Image 1 (cartoon, helix red, strand yellow):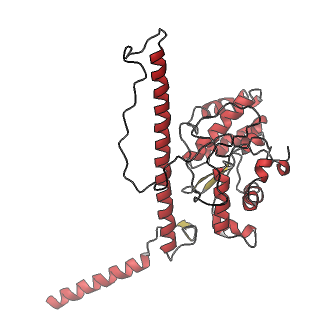
Image 2 (cartoon, rainbow, N blue to C red):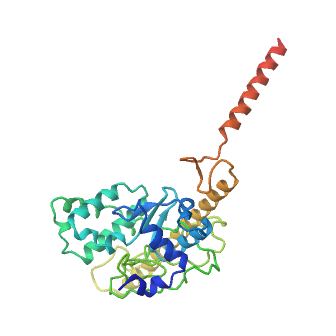
Image 3 (tube, rainbow, N blue to C red):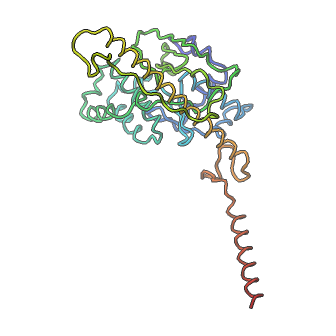
Length: 328
């Protein structure tokens, strides 16, 4: 199916479509792993009327629908389905490029997402020669032993405000048309598209919903984690190989508890990330030394005016010397 005929992609706002196709997929820094540089202020020049606020809002929509993932600390963006959709692993030589590009990724969370994509290709296309090719087989096998998105869950870099017209519904709108197995709970998108080849194939494979009760997230003290229920019944505290309905009920109760605990931990991570993100934006807004991306020239700004600090230090030193001379 053409990207222009895909309902999920065409449901995106115009700015989000523009950011994906016009900016990210054509970016000169886009690697074989699907990673590109992410500096929003430097991308606004791609359109005469584009602003940083509009671009970041578009990025938030793409992120919530899992078309792309971000790491603001390492300034990287991942076009999530790039490896899989362009079938880069079909060609062993391109597989070499993917492995090399993975090694250049700085973000741990994006590296984990890439591993999940490679594992998905392995599951869906076991006949690709790259899995056994002499120059790539071992490297790919080693990569798939690394942490993936299930063990290193992703949290949104750009939280979408409540009431945002471009925000994604909380309910799972899974439109997986290919019958793929459930990819898990931590790395699933809120709005899953699985039908378009890239530029073609936009196939967010996962779903992640925002937990309830986060309207005041980041403002309440952490509550003590409750003790988990036992996985076995009271008659079989160590478990049993014999059929036991009570043990079965206990196992299900433990699974529910584990899922709830995982959700609480994810909510806490998102709350902490939200606070850190807002603090970073506030520091940049108050600093007169750096640009809108937090850069002073080519370096990340620490928001310290060293010239002013040095001047104050010199003044204090002179005052101390003058005082010492006067005492003599």
